[in-house]
Image: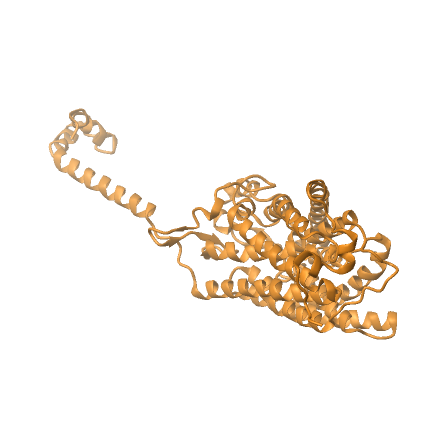
Length: 502
């Protein structure tokens, strides 16, 4: 032991309570034993520190992991084949394969971009608008040598899922969002132009909006009241505002719908639009596609709980109830407007209900979900008829009328029916204690305004990015196929094949 330390030990002992210096000096005679004890304590402390540093990653519940992997598969089914068949049946037979190609290849392209850099931009710490590059090429999501997997936070303290599963689940959201845009300018866009636009739009619109709405530090980061402000400041801008978006009303539907609407303006109307009848070539396939979307949407919405828990169950039943209500509402509206309900209307109503309940799925009660579905059926029916005429755009497959209008409606009504006074679960008031806003403290007007801000930010951001991206693509390779190619059909002219043999 250091000699100077030994010499000063009597004074230290006296200071610790041995007021008799002589007694302290006698105690110092046993300094070697004390030194050994101190050394043992230091070694033990070091061992504890090392053990803490080497503590195993949180264990993952097999039920949560299984549910999230199943949900990921369900969302893949939504895109391919669900959305592809839904859109494919709505176009003319000569363009069937072109739509299938655009959906499938767009989905695949965006999934690859997601794993290269998109996930990192959306779900790592950066600033209020965009993340960083910590997860570039999925770096750090698992240690191949140690065989360990990084954890991703859920919405419950102390509960995690493998980050690799979370990243895969979110990849399907990115892929289907970009694929949704295809429907707005179907039957006249260049295949290469579609893909180039998707790269630009995904990078500068989808990833930032996903970060702004969904990125936060996780519930365990809120360990005490002292760190709340710092943790909030690290979250995405729209999350900081307090907006509720359970599964993507803003990130997916409004974001994609605005891009589609911009594209329908900038690419222009189809040849003969307004003079010729553009009838769906196979409502059977459209109905099959809509049905696959409905089934897959349970993974989309209930999977967004990130756990196999009560809120997943709430999102599940709300997805069921709202969609059924919207089908009935659309059919009733058509009956009143046209004198008869149609299969196309029923399928469109289902999608409208699914879209509207998306941001609300785990944020409202069952009665709230039924009301949202009913309203969505009527409002989206107006969106694809009255609003479409007002906008004057050739939105081929009514992307804005259904996804834009339904997404905006669902986002705003989430703020209404989230209220505990209307059967909703309320909103977390304090992530340190996970305390909820009490019924008498919940303000519908305030929450609706917060929701509206999120909607407005999404609309403006997506519109600006879309205009710039479409302009770049137009200057580089052109947006539209030649007139003769459009008349002959994109299946033959763009892909050299046909959907149906004659």
